[in-house]
Length: 153
Image 1 (cartoon, rainbow, N blue to C red):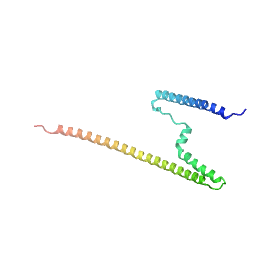
Image 2 (image 1 turned 30 degrees about the vertical axis):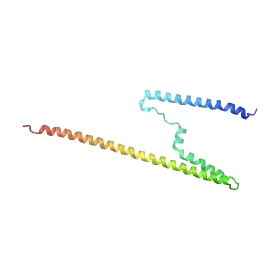
Image 3 (image 1 turned 180 degrees about the vertical axis):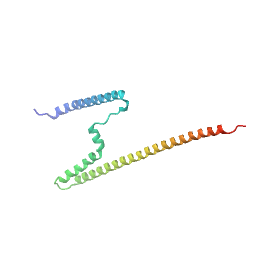
Image 4 (image 1 turned 90 degrees about the vertical axis):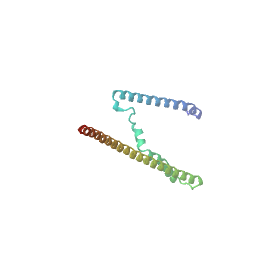
């Protein structure tokens, strides 16, 4: 028995809804387990570690996104047909996409560096403020000692 387009159209929404319901249930159980772990050991934190696929995607998102247009251009190059206006537009859009992805990656790295520099500056400022507070405390104690030594008339 072959599946017709009508049967596929009828079954697809229920399959998608079922998959979404299963995913929501999984994420809810994962969140509940993390909350229970946090109650037992607060050092665990409320945010769980990312799963291995998510960690891989976060680590290599640039290569994954950049690979799409590159593979598309490789496929187009291997296609032995005369160049047309649509192929030229296709190549131009792929190069524009690759340029956009590279610019977004550069901006993300730049923002990350700026954030790291700001956090380093904040830590330095906190250290300086702590040292100034300690110096002022020592100075006020020294002034109190000197005031006690002053002769009173």
